[in-house]
Image 1 (tube, helix red, strand yellow):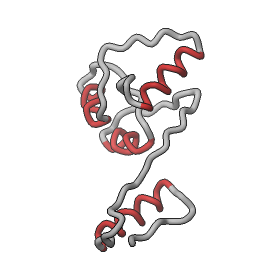
Image 2 (cartoon, helix red, strand yellow):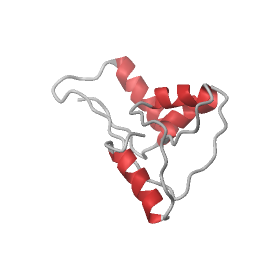
Image 3 (cartoon, one colour):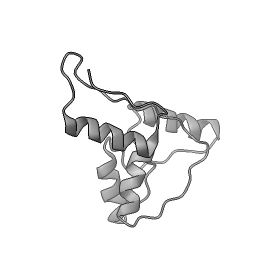
Image 4 (tube, rainbow, N blue to C red):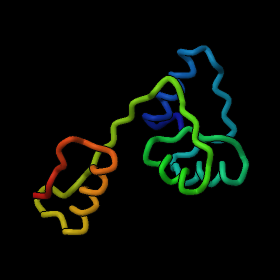
Length: 107
């Protein structure tokens, strides 16, 4: 994760708090690139929960990272335009996989 992104800042802070030097060969801002580099044998990556699903599907070994670093995701939609049925279905499937307790609806 690139250190200029919020997740990257939190990761760097976790290493600093643990007094562990953070030695990076490369920083990327997209998890798909991080997964491609890992798949090519370049090294390891620290990924969020969404990216872990893709990594697992690609046969990569998943190990927990401690301490747990909370990352807040947001779902954006047009304020004055209703969601399409496909978009609403995507939201329903997404929330069935990751939460929250109350799905949002279009409108």
